[in-house]
Image (tube, rainbow, N blue to C red; front, side):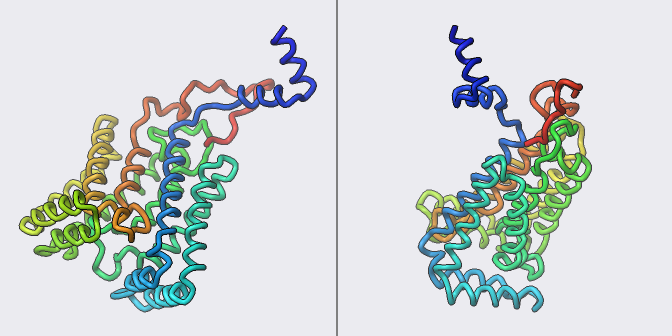
Length: 338
């Protein structure tokens, strides 16, 4: 009788019937959707950090303006111009920045808006990479994997592309390849991690005491336990900086090529990438989030999320969690994936 009543409500268009239909059509998020939700959470965290008191002060605009130093005029002049606007209107501009990032995070999390939000995140990330990070310091000689180069925000744009919603039936050996294809995704992985390996060999990282100074400088304003860790790590790297820079470059180069290895090697490469991301995040002082001046968690968590997107799936034939039946005249084709 209960089932008959439910059927009657559904035929009559009752809310209970509508809810039953929705419940039956809902499916658990797949791997790529879970990664999208983590990315959404990081964007929300960025928005929350943007509401810190420091961001509404002159110090924030001065921090942004400082990234112009050493860059070519074509890069530096727009940075100085935007920093002046922010200095003149700190409250309004910072509130807008925070709300944009919160909106991007909520949009990625809300399934109907995820494409619009991911597209907006690419545009916003590129703008911040230039006007807020000075292109990550890659043109002024200050770029190092330990200070977040080639710019944490550019990894947001890369993740948005790799996690872009595509067809559910696209075959790929890892979640990051389901939209671009495995070959393009592997090349993007190679470019990112290979560039980090290259930057580790430049003077900003390899010069005597440079690596130790970078890490020790992250201790300022941090809680005692984190400041102590960065101080000890900085002291060790000060005495062994050039050698550790070479070791770091080798590790990053191994990670860069690991995506092209067979499944066991690729899996080992992802685990090495996760460990490297954790080390870099610690060296970055957790992005300064606990010091009251961090605008984002820096590159460590983003590199870890990227690594998870390349974790080899159990089967490359079907990226979805279950076997998909082919579309027939009575069964609609699979909708666009998450």
